Length: 112
Image (tube, rainbow, N blue to C red):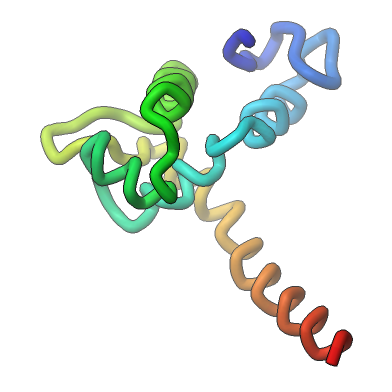
């Protein structure tokens, strides 16, 4: 699987519209989870693996390479961390966490 770059063919778009490239990336296993877990601060490879529910090293390495290439994360002295673009993306998806908690509660109440 290739890295979903805007302007290149991606899942769902032959022209690689930027939104489609982003959705392709975020739809990949653990891509959004890595971004979500790095919002709380930098992490080494091993620390990030633990935060991500013991993701396999191979998958974590693949996603880190993709996210670095797409400038959403960067490697610093303290470990992997969100780049400025990654922080901006997290700010956009962060409200989904609150919404999903409300949604889960509503489903639970409805099933009781």
